[in-house]
Length: 442
Image (cartoon, rainbow, N blue to C red; front, side, top):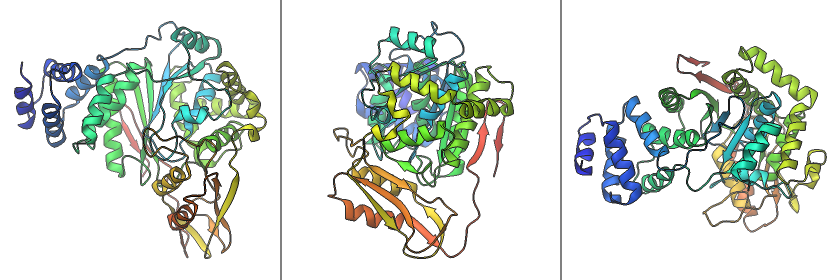
C-alpha cells in the first residue's frame, strides 16, 4: 500500500477503504508518511469530502493511535457532553453536577482554552486549591462515590488528532465537516463515554457561523456515534451573542453557581435543561424529555445540584466556601462600566468581539504560552432585545492590567449595537439531531 495511491484515489473522488485510512493515519503518527503527503491528502478530503462510513473509519483510526479510557469499573451508563465552543460557555459547570445529582455518572475529561477565555479546567482552577490531577484509580473511585469527577486530557488521548489538526491549521484544511467531526468525536470516544450529547453552536461567536453548516456538523457527528456504537444526540444552539452574562474564568464560575441556585440567566438555564434532559434520557434515567426536565428543575429547586457541585469541589481539593461566598473567588482590582450612548434597544451583541475583548483584558490566551488572569473579564448587563436608555450600563469590565483598557472600552461600545426599534427575538435552541430524525425549530 502506498500513500501516493491513497492521495490519488481521494483526489479523484473515490471512496477509501478502512485499511487505507488506517494506513494513512498510523503512518502519519509513526513518521513514515511525511507532512507534504498528509497535506495533499487533507486537501483532497477538503475538496472531495468523505462518506459517512469513511468518516467513522477515520474517527476510529484516530482513536486507536492512543489510549482509550476504560470506564467499565464505573457503575451505570456514562454520558459525556461536548460543546463546539463559544463565548461565555460555562454549561459543563452547571450540567455535570445536575446530571450527577440525578444519579447519572459524569466522568469528564476537559481541556484548557486557547482563545477568548480559558477552558473548563481553567475556569475550575479559579477555585482556590482545585486540582484536576487525579490518578485513573482515584478518578473512577470518585465517580462511583459522588457521581462526578473531572480531569485534564492526557497527552496520549487520540494523539493523531493533535498532529493532524496542527497540519490542517497551516494548510487551510480546517473547515471541512469530515475532518472537524472526526477530530471532535475521536476525543470523546477515546474518553470512554457510553453516550454523548453534543452542543453545536451556531452564529457569530461559534466555529460554525451558519445554521446549515452547524446542522451538517451535527449530523456528521451523530452518524459517527451511531456507526461506532455510541448513543449520540446533538443540539444546535445560538452563539450570536454570549451565553449568559459573564465572560471570564472566575466570573463564569460565579454565574454557574448562581444558575445551580436557580438564579442564573434565562438562556444558560434553558440550555442546561435541554442538554441535561438528553443526558438523562440517554442514560435511561428519564423516559421522556418532559420528565427529565422536571427532574433537573427539582434538583435546582431542592439545592441538590449545588450540593453535588460542592462535594465535587471538596473532592478535588478546592475551597468549597466559594459556593456560599463567591467573593472568595479571584477578584479583579477594578470594575469599569461601559455606558450606552443613545436610547433604543439592543439589536446585536457580537459574541466573537466580546470574547476578543475579554482575552485582551487577560481572560484568555493569545498564544499557548500566555498566562491567564483568572479574575478578569466582562459581565454584560443587557441581552439582545432589551431596552436601553442613554447612560445605562451595557457591561462591566473586570480589570487588573489597564494596558489595553481604552481599546477594550471602544471595542465593547462598538460590539453592542443599539437601534430604535426592538427586534423580534430568535429561538435560542435551533433544533435537535438524533440518529433517527432531525427536528428544526426555525
